[in-house]
Amino acid sequence: MTHLLLPLPAEPAVPEQACLVLADLVGSTAIAHALPLGTYTALMAELVQVLMLSFELRGGRVLQHQGDAVLALWPAEATAQALCAAGEAHERAGSLGLAASLGLQLQLRLGIAVGEVITGVVGGQPSAYGLPVNYARRLCDVAEPGETLICADAVGLLSAALPCVPRTLPPLRGFGPECRAYRVLAPSARVTPMKTG
Image (cartoon, rainbow, N blue to C red; front, side, top):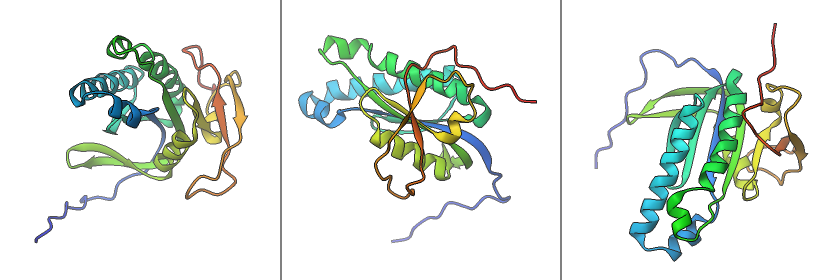
């Protein structure tokens, strides 16, 4: 069997400082067991579309989604907009029409991390590589239903009025015990970036 390798870029990619948001549906496996496949597929399609549109409306670039998870990227200086998009994602997932007609109340977990990434297009789909992608995934994994966890570096890019509290984390696979995160209490459109210069 011959394997085709994708060509390497002609010029080295330039790293950028970015904010990554990962949203994941709570209890999707149980929902998949409970619903006929066609109904489950329609529900996931509606959820993913709503998440993608929510992130894009707040200036995010949707990178990829797999099943019920959506990953989006903002420039690091737009972390406030990413946080607003996260809050709106919770609200929109909780009010999906199809879910309501099925008697379901959907909840998300979200993880937000900032740092250096390299972006590009792989197989026709925008992608990002770097530790913030992994960190956002780990934060999302340990978040409680309905919770958004944000890394300490992301908090540093926001105004002092950020409504959050420190959150004790279990050990995060691949990250040391120095990882600090915050639980966002009430994200809203009123959160503004810090003034610089």
